[in-house]
Image (cartoon, rainbow, N blue to C red):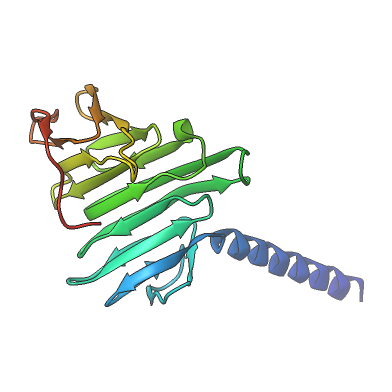
Length: 207
């Protein structure tokens, strides 16, 4: 009888642990606020599922779009991420304690076209990671294009009322760091690492 009771208690403990892990893995960090054609989400240890409007976006999930499709995600802090066609990224880390509180946001772009608008999480706690560079922000709207080899381009936009922003880009291979300002764009991630020349302009296709 005692052995059965202990076994039952142990089983309940395992169930509680599994439930806790599942709850952590299914932690919502935002929602799908716009979808064109189709978009998909794969939560940790889960199969790929099609997203629908207002579906929860899960922490550590992989998000993807197909040809001729697009997705917009609105995170809990008000930041927005737009993904163009054939794009893949991971919500690598996200912690939000409410307006004025602590927080952390890390998004990992794999390939495709992305437009990011920052929210209320402190800017020094927001990071965009790509295969070849990391991007730090200072209250920013910017577009990033990632090709199949992990290189690409980045352009910083102006705010809706003409506000000027900037980002800090660090090359993972060389350690080279540059500041990029609104109205400017730069290529990155060539065969030897480093950056192309900074030029005026933007990247089309992900508004």
